[in-house]
Structure formats: structure tokens, C-alpha cells
Amino acid sequence: MNPNVYIMVDNCYGEFVEEIEPIEIGADLIVGSLIKNLGGGIAPNGAYIAGKKELVSLCAERLTAPGLGKEVGPTLGINKQILQGIYMAPSVVAASIKTVVFASALLEKLGYKCFPCCGEKRTDIVQAIQFSDKNKLIKFVQGIQKGSPVGSHVIPEPWDMPGYEDKVVMASGSFTSGSSIELSCDAPIRPPYVAYLQGGLTYEYGKLGVLKAVENII
Image (tube, rainbow, N blue to C red):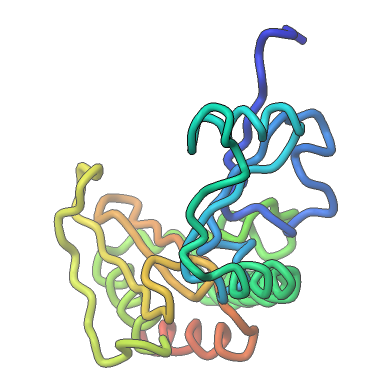
């Protein structure tokens, strides 16, 4: 390996899914968001950098000021929620994985293609579901919103979104805005009409959300 090249992994959606993390098999740094896996649905904001000590220190110097590094920086007064979220994260990620495994098993039985399939090895919490039908795709996403804890009365519609060439429909009735460890689903409106489902703070509510979505198609 080139000693002048550092390997950094964006580990969003991947924390606690596998038995080992990227820094255990050669990555120099891993980074991610705390409104995804590692925040456990409790941290309302923030992100993390982990890995080789000297590289984390260099990042801290860049993010704050040379010479100050990790001695200063914004905590936003949420240290308790961050720590509690990390503490709860393994359990929450397990519930999320169980939710998407259930979703893939159910939707495969209904004739839809799922990636990964129900029995396949998983490396993140994302479940792709191919509907091959625009209306069924939209109905499924709207059904996830119906099963959400916040804004269940809202009906998402496809709309323009920065960074996307196609209109996008998105369900995210989450306690924390933008959280994807909470049950959410989004999809670009283009063939073969694939929805991306992720999250679920508890298996029970994740299962309910998936059943609502399937019911909405039927």
C-alpha cells in the first residue's frame, strides 16, 4: 500500500451491521452521521470521526483551529443525547436490520425483487425494492409515511430535489428531521422504480410501517 495515501470510509448506514468495522481491516479513518446508525435515534444532530489517533487529531485541527484541535468545538449542549444514542445504537441497528429483513421476505412473497434478498448477507441498513410500476412505488412510499410516528396524515408526492435528475418521493415521519435510522423510504421516479427503505427504531413499529405500506399498495 502507498504510505502517502490514507483510506477513509464513509460508514453511514453501516455501523454495527457487521461483526467488524472498517478500521479493523485496514481503513485509516471512518466517518458518519449521528442521525443514522450510531446515534441510536436519540442524538438529534452531529457526526463523528474515528480511526488513527494522529489522523483524528489532524481532522480536529482543521475543523477548529491549529493548536486547539479537540480542546474546543461545538457540542450544542447535546453530549448526553450523543452518548445515550451510542449506548443504544447496537440494539436500534438490530431492530432496523430485522425490519428490512421482514420487508424483503414479505415483498419477495408478493413478487417484487429485493436487493439484498431476504437471506443474503447485509452490510448496511438499506433495503432496495424494485416495483417496476410507478404508481405502486409511490403508494408504497406514501404507506411508509402513514405508518410513521410524526406526520402520518401527510401524503408525500414526487417533487424536484437538488442533486437529482428525476423527481423524488420521500417518506420520513421521524422524530428527528432527516434521520434515517428511524423508518424512512425514498425513491427517484424513474424505471425500474426502485424504493430505498431503511431504519426502524424498534422492530414492532418497523413491521407496522411496512405492513401499512403494503396495505397501501393493495
